[in-house]
Amino acid sequence: MSFFTKTPAVSSDETKIQELLTRGVEDVFVKESLLQKLRSGKQLRVKLGIDPTGKTIHIGRATILWKLRAFQELGHKIVLIVGDFTAQIGDASDKLEKRPMLTKEAVKENLKSYKKIIGKVIDVEQAEFVYNSSWLSKLGFAEIAKLADIFTIQQMTERRNFKDRMDKEEPISFREFLYPLMQGYDSVAVKADIEIGGFDQLFNLKAGRVIQKHYGQQEQDIFTGQMLEGTDGRKMSTSWGNVINITDEPGDMFGKVMSVRDELIGKYFLLATKVSVSEIQRIEEEMKGGGNPRDSKIRLAKEIVTLYHGAEVALKAAENFESTFSKGEPQEFVSVSLSGREVADALIAEKIVSSKTDLRRLIGEGAVTNLDTKSKMGEDFLKSGPAGKYRLGKHRFIEIK
Image 1 (cartoon, one colour):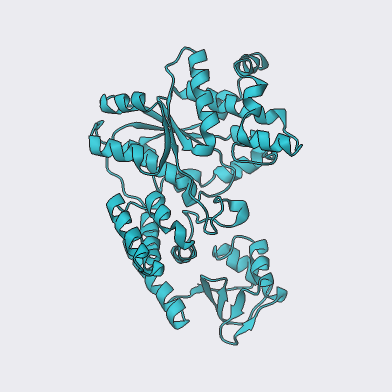
Image 2 (tube, one colour):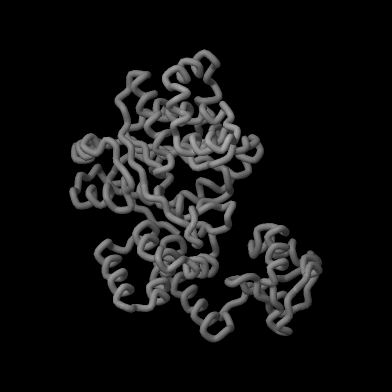
């Protein structure tokens, strides 16, 4: 849930600029140049590219979207590039193995809900929302060769992840070397003043500066945000299942936040909420002084759910969580009517589980329980289950009618 007002005239408010450039920021390049631009009162074109390699966005990736929102609230023009072309090629920035190429059909499927999801954070009506296939698909071999000539193989292989893969004698596709060229050309196509991204994107972001200079454009400044770890302390990754998606149901989102490691509470407050830095420092000092991390985590979960679903829904999710884990019984069950359908099909339709594989995984983990009989459900639950109340995993509760 997001509420927007009309984009204001460009603001050069120093307090807001300093918070923008310091909170959750890994690096700014070139900071002096960017500061001068932000103080000038000129509307800047701020670029972010997102490849639709999945069907949703987790809160780790959303930290950069919130930075876009901050630029937007200062009155700058957001240029959001959906990498429908580059997603087919695959960015190797954070990968220690070759990334598979996506089909056009897979990208198209992933794109269906992207604009709506991103609209939970930024005002997409005030932003430029463009697709890089509209220019990259038209580049000829001669133009690509000219772009490739700007860089050396040595520059590419000095990248940490490529170097690690070479040391392990793992294959690196030449196709992966082309990705920075395409991302850099995106900056030329939209005439970006600033490009933002995760710190793992730094090589690609700097490539944009080189390619803009090649085409006679002013070089963009670069802004990278800190990376947010997943609930288990590793890099947040859909493939590892340690993500909190911004489209998660409120109860699921609340429960996932409560599973975050205690040592990450402060960082989550900093990167994933709007709580002031001074208040975060107070919370951290309180925990160091012996305060119960669970209390801070409940506050954290409320703040995150509020951002995406609203304060009233967050309060309800908190009450339900407390009831579930303090008294053993949730306040609300999602009602599911089979109406002749198999249980798996009904749960997928109601968005209780994402797929039959998801439900089968839960069953295999012994995480599907009939609360009336206190019994674990087996594989036959995919097709049928008696009327009653069930618990799926830690945070999903249903009542089959």
